[in-house]
Length: 152
Image (cartoon, rainbow, N blue to C red):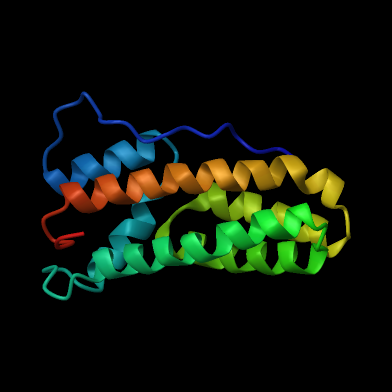
């Protein structure tokens, strides 16, 4: 696998121009979220009145809470079909919220599971688990720092 190491979101020490830019910049600096994807989501609810960002992020977190245990169970039972399905599902939803690195790793694991190479996918599965945690943190930080996202 040619994956970059996971970098966890941490507060930026730079003085940003706005709260939105600060949160997006922090997430982008640490390679967790793609600011362009976040910008596209914001455009769908520019005033934040519908709390779209919060709702999308909460749906993603709910999905993680359901899928990650399934991934670990599938790994433990060497169930390649389930590993492939979970990786495929996470690949798409991760890309939607701008978690590009997580999406890439999921694509790699999905391909390995499709080829029944679960031994080769072990490090990728571990990377999915740790990257998912970094994405959770980045999403929580972005939502907490974003007045247009609404209450998390």
